[in-house]
Each structure stands twice: as C-alpha cells, then as structure tokens.
Length: 374
Image (cartoon, rainbow, N blue to C red):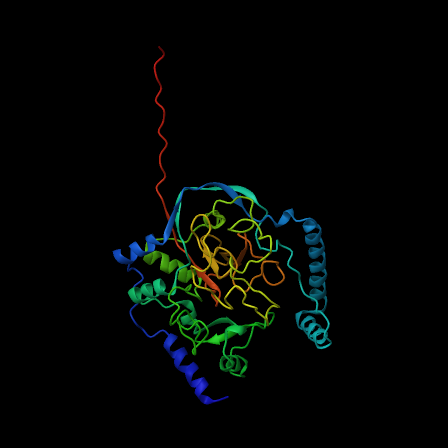
C-alpha cells in the first residue's frame, strides 16, 4: 500500500486528536442562532396517539416468535456445551462449506418496537429536520466541542461509501478491520462529522445533510448549547406519525404500485453488496429530502437513525431506522414509524443523527365558577 495513503490517515487522525484547545460547554447559542433553530421547528398540540408497532397484527407473527425463541435456546445450549471458541470454529467451518452457520434469530418485532398501545403527550416543539452539518458547525465553532468520534479517532462506515484506498487501509494488518458479524461495517480511522467517509472525504456541498457520526452524548451537548433537549421517545413517534393513527408510514398507506422511491431513503437491492439507489441516494440524503409528513417533519423513517431522550446509562434509544434498513424487512430493521433500537451513549456511525425538541407552555383550562342557586 502506498505510504502516502497512510500519511493521509495519520494527518487526519492527528487533526481529530484532543489538542488542548479551550472547550466551553457552558456557552449558549447566540440569539441569531436560536432564531434559526426555532424557525426550523413545528409546535405540536399533543394528545392521544398509537405508540408502538403494528407488526404484531401480521398473521402468524406470534408463532414465528415462539419458534425463534426455541431455536435460540438450542444455540445457547450448544455454546454452553462446547464453549464460545469451539462454537465459532464450527461456524467458520460451515461457512467454508457454503453452509449456513448456527446463530441466534431476532425474535422481537421486526421493527424493534413493542406492541402498540394508546399513549399521550403534552404540547411540545420539535425540529422539522435532523440537525444539519451547517448548524452543527456553528455549535462546534461556538464551543470548541469535539465529538466522541473525534476523541476515539475513528468511527464506523459502510463499505459501499468508502473509496478503494480507504477499504485497503481498513483491511491492512494495521487497520481497524470490520465488524465480525457484519463485515460491511468498517472501522475507519479519522471518520467523523467533518470527514464522514474518512480522511479522503469532506462535507463540502453537504451543509444541508444530517450531521453524521454523532453519539447520544454529542446530541445532548448540542441540545444544551441550543437551549433545547432531545425529544422523548413518545414525542418523537407522535411527531413522526404526522397525525396519522394506525398507519405504518409517516405518509400513510403503502403505495398501490409499491414504489417508495419518492418517499424514503432506504436500502434497495441485495444487502450489503448492491444498492440500486432508485431513491436517489446510496448513503445519507439531505435532511429535507422527500416530502414532509402532515406535521412538517422530514425523514422520520429511513435516512439516519435519530437519538431520543430516555433509556438507561448503558442503553440509549434511537428511532426511525436509516438508509441501510429495508421496507420489506429483508435486511436489517423493518422501516416503520415505530422502528426502534438501542445502543450505548458513546456510539455513533455513518448513519446516526438527531433532532431537538423543547417544551411548550400548556394552556390552563378555565375553571367554571359555581353560581348560587336562583
């Protein structure tokens, strides 16, 4: 491999390293920036809505879950019997014979959410789009903040987004390699929000794209600067549904011709090696791509996963799915307004972002005064 490629990586990693520059996390957004942020929000009145997946209504779903749990127990028993190392060796041998290995199945709902219930939220405001590169850059300029991807000096990127040179570095003996169970996810030195696909990439011309590689901690830091907060999980789903109850998508029903290409950024083709990009994008699309829902929110399904409030210190919550997920559930998560997963607070990758929310004052109901009897 040419040494110049590794030199590029070394320079990029050095640029992301903590340099001792003053970081001021107490600083707040200027009035001008606050106005920009608020102008990109919609105020919602709240109320009752369907919260959770409708996937459980699909015929045969409960039987499949039961069967999946039984198969998973067999895998666990095998691991307990032979040990993890031997179990992995058996799977490697099976793969060498082009046979399917033994692995646990997903037994939760295909969109990762819980069975639907009727829930309620009070009035709140929420961003129309995920936080963009342009707005995140203002935050960083104001505060000197360094994202966790910069602190770690690397992040995950899907192989299809990388140049051949970056793939060579990933696979080099001194590279970070790939996720064992998901070889398409590559550990890339120097990947962060300014260099989303690694040192040889940039955000030039992508000011209206989501700020990528952001962790839950990064999102909270931005919200504090902006005088905002992350939306709660229920607020997020209420807004994502756009007032459409008992529907799987923010636009309503599945199109009669099953053509989603003008509606959502999802994976199309054989995952992970083929993306037909008939929706216009291979990776993340602009934050305001496609039509908004009835509440004015963009891309609440697909494009990038969005951090929300809540969860635990060990597991924080993301909603909406991303461009690597599918509308038919054939690969990764099933894309719905109920799509959900959890990850650690310091995790981020090429398909994570967030949007902000804020409280609204509730109108107090006037109490009717009692009148004396006539």
